[in-house]
Amino acid sequence: MLFNSIEFAIFLPIVFTLYWFVANKNYRWQNFLIVISSFVFYGWWDWRFLFLMIFSAGIDFLAGLKIEQTGNQKKKKAFLFLSIFTNLGILGVFKYFNFFIDNFVRAFSFLGYQINPVSLEVILPVGISFYTFQALSYTIDVYKNRLPAVKEPVAYFAYISFFPQLVAGPIERATNLLPQFYKARRFDYDNAVNGLRQILWGLFKKIVIADNCSIYANEIFSNYRHYSGSTLLLGSFFFAFQIYCDFSGYSDIAIGSARLFGFSLMRNFAYPYFSRDIAEFWRRWHISLSTWFRDYVYIPLGGTKVRRHIQIRNILIVFLISGFWHGASWTFIAWGLLNALYFLPLLIFGKHRSNINTAAEGKLLPSPVEFIQISLTFLLTSIAWIFFRSKSLSDSFAYISGIFSKSLFTVPEVFPKSFIAIIMAFVLVEWLQRDKQHALHVESLKIPRLAVWGFYLILILIIFLYGGTQQQFIYFQF
Image 1 (cartoon, one colour):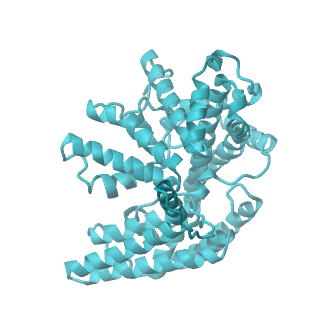
Image 2 (cartoon, one colour):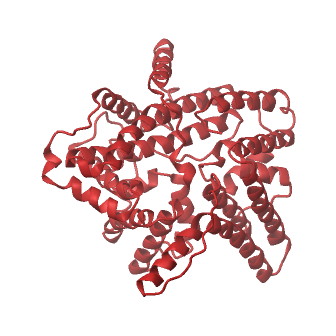
């Protein structure tokens, strides 16, 4: 079930009504309703994948209990390994099996041996990378004594399957989300209204910006050999805005929907395209995944408490794993490696923590230096996105080669003026609200109510005017 679908527009109010008017007096009944609703939501794509999620979640639930109950350290590690092996094993089979087989065959073919490969004709379950990492955070945290094991299976399945963030995050930590399922929840009008605002902004980003950017990005990337360098560069910008508005739009809708039910999800995006260096960008982009890798990979490898060359190794490992997490393709690995190469000079010279605060904090405009830093970071990020978007490494390098040609200084062939004006207006709104949780977080602003509602109506009108064919969210494939 897509957030930008008629089905979800019907589904959400029904669940909201049952949640607050039928199950309101008991949080356990609310949890049960969340589980049933989440199964319906997830099963809307393919009900067979429900059994896969239930199986892996059941293993993790039992593993958590056993880890807590046993006093034997070896047994604790064994149950933790069972959870990790089950989750990563399922993820590996569905997402990476064919990738490894294909590359294994190519390697032997290069040496002169012919092998008849065995491949799996399977569909990648929607959201498997997200709920797998969420499940792993639970068993690891129980093992590390960061939280007690869950005794109520309904609460645990509600945590794993919570429909607002089930398919594409944020990837929640058990220490943050699980305790919320044990608390009595009361309807908060202001919080719900704020959630609706965030949903509206998320829909605007997805339907108006991302889906329309995809039209131009798809055209340019599909025919990149026939376009000038300036058009190719513009195409990379279109994709940069597409993937940002598509994914952050999903996160906004997820976080806003969770607010309607009295839950607080972690922030996933913090205006990353206003970053002044790559390190700041990764603190603001897909925050739930970046911090997951920091806490469960980078820090266990030594974090910042090891020698510089070990830190460099750890950074390379984290970025390569991050690229591979996104997809079983060398293009994603190259994307991760390129971002690591962007990041390493900042680490080596101790500049990776230089930009912690918000750009131009307390000011209307950035300084000339900040403007150059933001522009350069966006350009580097857009170049990296070319690897993310291209079908192969050869396409990626050919596309980048096409950008840096004499035709870079010509007028782009694809230049939709009216839509670019909308993108510029969108950037302006986000810039003015860059210190807020989301762009429609207007409680603290002294703006007449009539003007605020007028802006909402304009957004809704633009959504209907520019909303074309319904498109899936990009991160559903991960």
